[in-house]
Image (cartoon, rainbow, N blue to C red; front, top):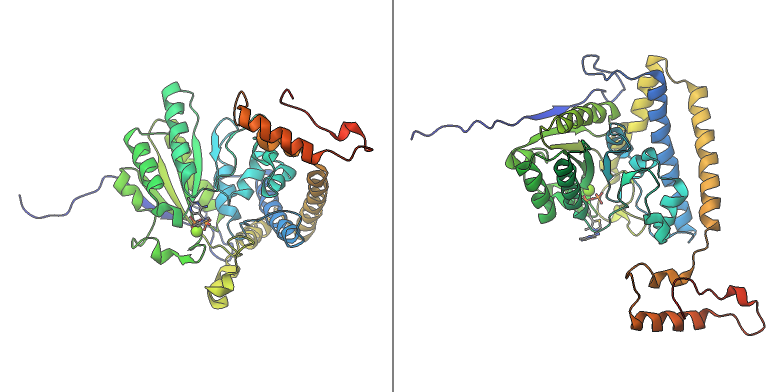
Length: 373
Ligand SMILES: Cc1ncc(C[n+]2csc(CCOP(=O)(O)OP(=O)(O)O)c2C)c(N)n1
Ligand SMILES: [Mg+2]
């Protein structure tokens, strides 16, 4: 056999619809109504302001660790806007914009970061899973859900997200390989924010793009400008159509940047320079989309101001609601077993005794839900 090139049948593309100044490529522009465009802008700002507020709450000791998604909002919200509530949304921990869009209430997300179980319960009517912190696990779960969707023939599409660093984990490989073999209706967004805590993208993979990993799984891959919500919408829309038509999974690499801290437990100044961050500020997805909307005559200064006011008020109400939430500490013993084993019953009794108010206080403070004592 002579030596030659192997032609690979699968597509690998790149896409941007807006340039850094918000100038649109009309040939690629998705057709969205002014209302839809305004709603998307609102969604981006909502996530940004929510992040800012949660960072402040963490600094005040009012929630635990927080992982903001500053700069990555478009890469989350664009895809989320292209699936239906019946489809599956399987996030990692940097999908606040998408989760808010899906219908997760702010106070619920806030309670998750405050360590309350309630934050991990999915709002009624959504086919979502809670925030996944163990890096990479959600993609395997997404592949499993996509397998179930295909097996049942219910026509649902599964949208999941993973970080650039996490694509170097076996979980990602196994999930994508499985999805490719079974032609599953899975869309996997790589949030390539250039960093995995302090590990830069170049130390995650020697491949020039992460999208090209798709070729090895025999599926289509596309590298999209992740700070361009329109590019994310076009890429996801096509991937969803393909998935619904039984044409299998798509891997979308969203090229973006983590503008803020990894989490509130991190200080990026220790490992990256201000010069590196600066150019990304010019490519801010909200700024860019806002310029596009302004040129299109869909949003002006007054419209932006209204969005800001609405969002500030929504956050204020959500923080109040979250802080009124007073869970029963004994919940930590519940929900693991259908029938609580004797050693846990014993521990729960002990905790309950420790929590009991002194003799002269009201007996109703003694909670006894969930187990016969
Ligand atoms: C299994 C596992 N190992 C390690 C960690 C600690 N950890 C949290 S985030 C992170 C880096 C993830 O980087 P990347 O996948 O690029 O996502 P990003 O944080 O940039 O969104 C690590 C190592 C974890 N949460 N889970
Ligand atoms: Mg990363």
